[in-house]
Image (cartoon, rainbow, N blue to C red; front, side, top):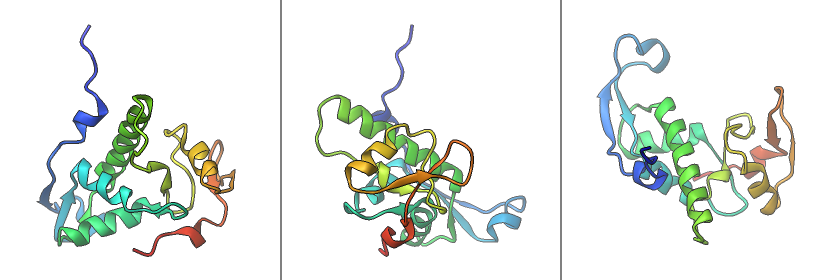
Length: 151
């Protein structure tokens, strides 16, 4: 049986810039789209200080601005947030103390990522209050908007 590729290894994929195709223009407009590098997403998450939160939209906006393109791909950005989270949990299991604080990344409406099982626990450890979200089986950070990072 072949072993799985470690999350940390998957983090080393390169970024690329592509033209926004005609099919995608209705959603994203015209111009260039960044397909981000997992390490760029990880590095951006690491800049979010304790007590602050960042949305996936804010991550995309900052990545696009940093690469001087019109938009960053929402699908790959979301995947790479999860990749950073899984790598961080893998690092925690191996005894590392300082890991990417992926739990500080929330959806635009303040809800948590349902696939990240330990996100709520990490946020509670940092003093955030968690409540039931607007949809079934979702959770949200109370007063999340007051904690969003401005930079």
